[in-house]
Length: 308
Ligand SMILES: Nc1ncnc2c1ncn2[C@@H]1O[C@H](COP(=O)(O)OP(=O)(O)OP(=O)(O)O)[C@@H](O)[C@H]1O
Image 1 (tube, helix red, strand yellow):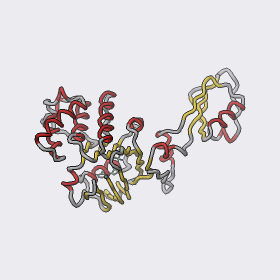
Image 2 (tube, protein in one colour):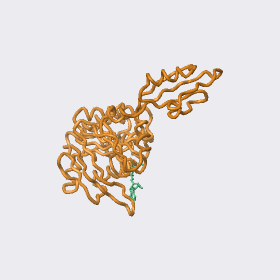
Image 3 (cartoon, rainbow, N blue to C red):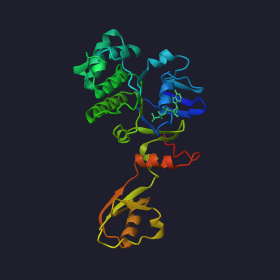
């Protein structure tokens, strides 16, 4: 439903996109993550037609965004990273405008505007100008503008930045509902727990391309977890075997954290080394570990997995 292939875009000597590929199926939410400057926003800008790539192509539901930009735009709902609302225009007028962009007929516009406003808790401010909205209300308005009219492809670029928990929860629920109705969603965030809430697949961008793509479980499966041991400060320090020591770092004032791929065996070895723990916690690898592993990987050794 959304297919990007071989996108390249240079700004001066710097490649913002450098062979960026991404496909998102109907009903799939893809968390597009990556460090600052990885190319996520540029990708969104290319899909929406704001930026023309030097090469590569993007199709939305089989329609080329380069050859038929208006037809492709009518299938897209977009919430850009930077808030882009007209200060003198009301929330209702904004939502009507965006409903028109996705080709909604006049009779359906009112119903859709009211329903998305209710979904994102904007019912009470529909007739206020955007200039007088709170930061969270502006975020919700921007998201509502992307969601109104049920577009088939959603591009949400850090839609919850600066949002309070209530706004965040409303937005995530709305995104899940759109995916359940068949939309393909690209969701950019630096807040990784959101992607667990959304049950998103992942696309990890680095240096202008997607370096890991697939299900969260598949991408984190081969990463080490961690055993965290809090020690009794009055007891002698354990004498860990050399091999275990190499994987051990301090944990708080009196603890150890040991990277592990085999928690039962490593825990037995830690206890066997005369350790007197007051608490033990075994952590499975998660998205933070995936992020850290990709950051640590040397350029050129980028592919982690491809389970999509
Ligand atoms: N209009 C522009 N002119 C020059 N350089 C740009 C422009 N837009 C983006 N870049 C550069 O392209 C690279 C990718 O930027 P982009 O905004 O796509 O990253 P990002 O992954 O969205 O980062 P962030 O997480 O900080 O939002 C960066 O090095 C950025 O400085």
